[in-house]
Length: 203
Figure 1 (cartoon, rainbow, N blue to C red):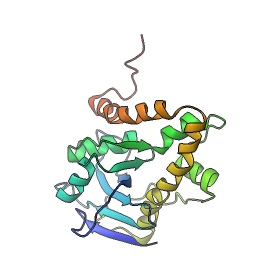
Figure 2: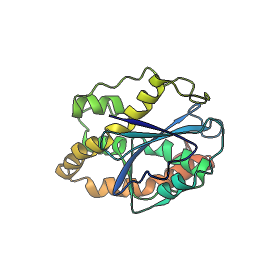
Figure 3: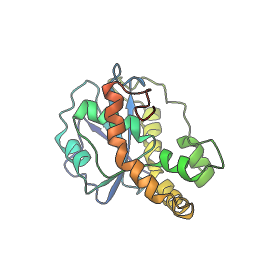
């Protein structure tokens, strides 16, 4: 495994074809208050690319182009939050989205554990450490421990998708999953607009 560090944008020699796993690290979990600090990406090849934003400068033309490219599938875990952070800071609405958390909730109704650590343990036999989850991602430099943690959040998403897709097929819920994935950018926009908790579909 190799972890590649990038400051403020992807390097010119980095390209993703077909699909890319994406996650974000932020100063906190408030879409209104907290800023994005790191975007991590992986092609599913065992390597991770971390784009670090020590200050809120989000020009990042190469990263923006990738995020906006509907021809490259974007794999997330809990896409709702990451998509909202991407919309807020980059003004990009990602298309062709897949969320392993949504997929798990639709096809693994035999359990109530759908966190990334749970999925990696249950489906892949991989034990993830969450020790750095609440560390200071706005620091001017990332520690080795932070970089390893950030990388681990994207390194397994392709393998999880490969395990979840047959389960969605088996349970006859793949069309429902695809409809949910298509709606996720709108769900993120609703969160940003203030409808985070209110169910607008209720009576």
